Amino acid sequence: MNTKQVQRRITTTTVALAVLGAALTAGFLASASSSRSAGTARDAIINHFQQAANRTVTVQQATGQRREFTIEVHKIHAEIAPGVKVEQWAFGFPGQPPTVPGPPLVVTQGDHVVIHFKNTHDQPHTLHLHGIDRLSQEMDGLNEVLPGQETTYEFVATEAGTFGYHCHFQTYLHADMGMYGAIIVEPKEASARVWKNEHAMILDEWDSRQNPGAAVHKSEPNYFLVNGKSFPLIPDITIPDGQTDLIRVADFGEEVHSLHMHGNSFLIIARNGFPLPQPVQEDTLLIAPGERVDILVKGRDGAFPFHDHIVKDVTNNGIYPGGIHVMLKGSPAVSAYGLPLTNTGDAHSHAMTDMQVDPNADVTASTTREVDEAYPDDSPAHSHVYDHLPKNSPIKVVNIKNFAFDQKELHVKVGTKVAWVNRDAVGHSVTGGTPGGNPKSRAFDSSNEAKGTPVMIGQGKDWTYTFTKKGTYLYYCLPHTNMTAKVIVD
Image 1: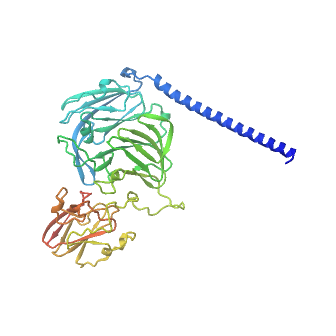
Image 2: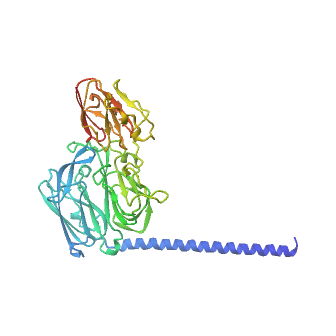
Image 3: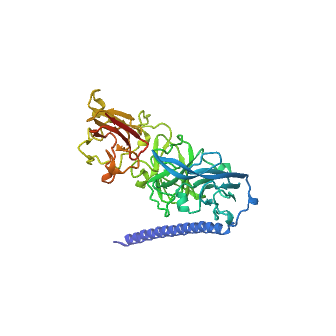
C-alpha cells in the first residue's frame, strides 16, 4: 500500500467516524429532546392534577338547568333469555314499567341534578352515584332508606361522560338482583358531540338459581346480559354505513369482560368519565367491574358480531350461543368482489355452531331412542331424508325452527316413531316433562342430562323416539324453556 492509498483510507475512516459521531449525537439529542418532551407532558399532567379543584361543588355553583327525577324500586319478573324468567328488583319512574337496567338519567354538563328516591320495595335500599365526583359526602348513598320512606340526592354534573347509580345496601345481593342504571352527562359544548346517535351496552351476569331470601348469598352466574337480556333477546345495534355513533359500554356486573368487534374497529375516546387526551383505536375492549368506556364506531356494510371473547360469557346456562353477543348492522352486505350479496343468511347465526354438540356422541338412552346422522355437517338441511317422507309414513316429523316446535300438539298411535329435525342454527333438545323437573324422572330426553353434561341436537341433526305407551307427553327445549309442545299417544 503506497502513501496516497494510506492517506485516502485515513481520510475515508475519518469521514465515516465523523458521520457516525454526528448521527449518534443527533440521535442522542433527539432522544433527549423526546425524553424532555415526554417528561414535560408528564409533569404538566401531574401539575394539572395537583392544581385542580377537588372540593364539593355546591348546587349554587351549577351553570346549567335544574334536572329532577323520581325513582322507585319494585319487584318484577322478567325474561332474561328465551323462556327463562327470574325475579328482579328494578328501578323505574313513577307510572312507567320498572326495568333492569333502570331508566337512564340523561343530563347536561353543569346541570343541578335532583333525584327523589322512593323506596316502594320491602327491603332497605340506597342510591350510590357511581363515578360522580366532587359531590357532598351526604349524597354518596351512605344511609339506607327503609321501606315506605324516601330521600333526595343532589349533585352538580361537573364532567361529561358515562356514570351510574346502584343500590349500596348489601350491594352484593341488591346489585345482583338488578338494582343499577346509567347516568349520562352530555357535553355542554355542542362541538364536543362528534357522533350522530348514542347506544348503551350495560353488561351484567345473572344466576337464575339465586334465592334473594337465603341467609347467605351465593352467586354462580349462568346467564350473561347486555341491557338485561341474553342473546338472542338482545336487540341489534344499527349504524348506517359511514355514520359515526357513540356506544357507551358499562360493566355493572362482577366479572371482567373482553368484547371483540368482528369486521370493524372502534375508537376509545373516554374511560370512566375522563376523556382520553389521545383516543386509541382497537377491535377488542377489556372492561372491569364498575368501568365505563365510551367508544366511537363508524358504520359499514354488512352485519358483524360484537361479543365477549370469554367463552362461557357467550352461553345461556352453558349452551352456546347466548350471553353477551350483539349484532352491529349497517348497509346491505357487499361481496369480496364488490357486488351486493343476495343471500347473507341469518346474521345472528354468524359462526355459531353449537359448542355442546358432539356428532359422535351416543345419546341413545334406551332401545326406543335413536340419533340419525342422515347427512354430513356440510350438507344443506333441505336434503334431509325426512323432507320427503310419504304422507302415510309410519314416521312422524316435528321440525324445530325459529325457536319453536312446528307441531304444538301431535297425535300418534302406540308404536309410532317421531323424528325431531333441528332447522335452527343453534342447538336444541327434546326434553320430556316441564322445566325444572328431575332429569332422572323424564320419559325421554335427547340431551341425556341425567348422565351428565347435556348434549344438544345440532343444526341439521335429528333425534327420534318411539312411543310404546298411551298417554300425553309434554316436552320442551332444555336451554330455551319457552319452547314447549306435546305428543298425545292413543
